[in-house]
Length: 263
Image: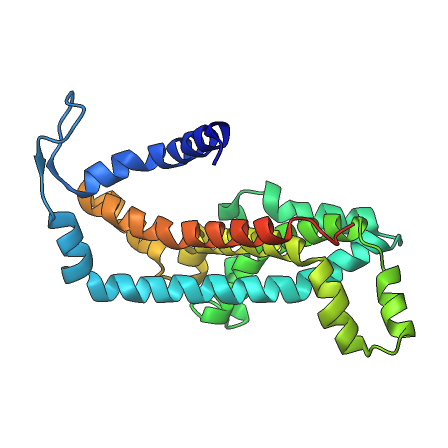
């Protein structure tokens, strides 16, 4: 590896990992008082609590959070791909109105959106249910998915599909072997946005889930309110790890495929 690239890589790693250093120090500290730069005493109490006393609760929170994020991401892609295709390839009446409606859940504070929908979800029997929480997550995730895929399909050339059909390819084969491979980088970015947004949802999950959907962000905020910083730091690192893995997997996929075939 060239020295310039090595220096750039090390600089990037340092920039990304530096904000997590205080969390690591807090998670292994026993005493850390101002104005000392480092903890006065170290110990495994926080991690013993995470993997011992709160282990079952933490694993359950991880499971619920991952399941919610995964289902939300899949539904966002199923709905976002055709919507992004329609918005990117065609001009029709009401297109600007649709884009405005898609922006509203993004620019309106999440608390207002969740509180406004709570009454409707209660009347529909969706409050305190898994489906209800997925639906409220979709309100925040789906616009990002559609906007990303809208941009992808703006530069997409549908003539490749026509050529495949003229050679005898079935609609399913065109979808699997032509369309999806060409928009795969956009799907990867959209899936990453949707997963991370759903993974980090707190207020909407708390309000619509009614406390029955015990996700990792809800556990983390309760620990932060308790004032036990070492334990909160340890749980924060556990919370960050799946998101970092999703980011690295997406970066690896984009690094292999780049933007080939999108244009």
